[in-house]
Length: 189
Image (cartoon, rainbow, N blue to C red):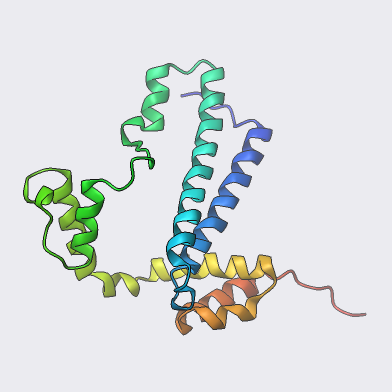
């Protein structure tokens, strides 16, 4: 393995793209809240796909650099995990529909009756639904949400908005995060 650092302009570009993605992810979470019932479908899809596309841009920038520096194409393909890449243009597949049926406690669709990805995704949906409350209270999940919301509130300079759309325990954590990010003012002389 080569141990040269990432070129500084590329590093700054990747940091910018990751920052944009984090903001888009926070908006995905924001649009899942009950007060956003009127446009959650549109906005969660917009922001989730924006986040995926922005991370794709970061990946492709890094891949272009790797290609430029002579990385073997099979190594690059391996690092890009191209077998995992799926296109959104085709819309949801049998596997996503099966996963949703499992989440919603519905009967397994016909395609999930057979062995394969759809059946696995149906089981995954059932498991997620059965353990939803445990995951809702998972400290790591709560902390992640609080960090995203607190960061956004600090960037928008609207910390008070946290109280209007978050469950109280998440809002409290997000306020602490926003407070920690506050720029201290010099003491008056």
